[in-house]
Image (tube, helix red, strand yellow):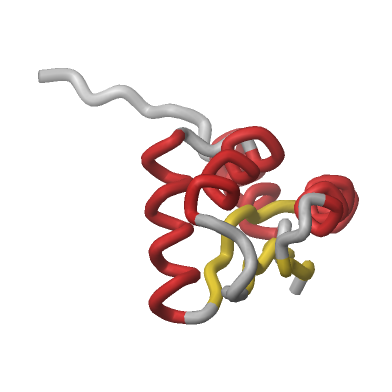
Length: 93
């Protein structure tokens, strides 16, 4: 069986780019918003799949907060602002 050698530089650069985006949108629990509204907002704003959004909503409810999106500050800022405009409690960390 022949083993193929693939260049490592492209893969390493992509991984470094993904992991160097060291910011997260953190969503916090509140007593105002419904599960449905949180899920709907995460699907629309953060482009979550419905199942992912539902899992995040439960984590927020039971643990008080959840990282809902990772990326660069520039990418996350408009999404965090959109969540805040919808009445959710979120910040970039």
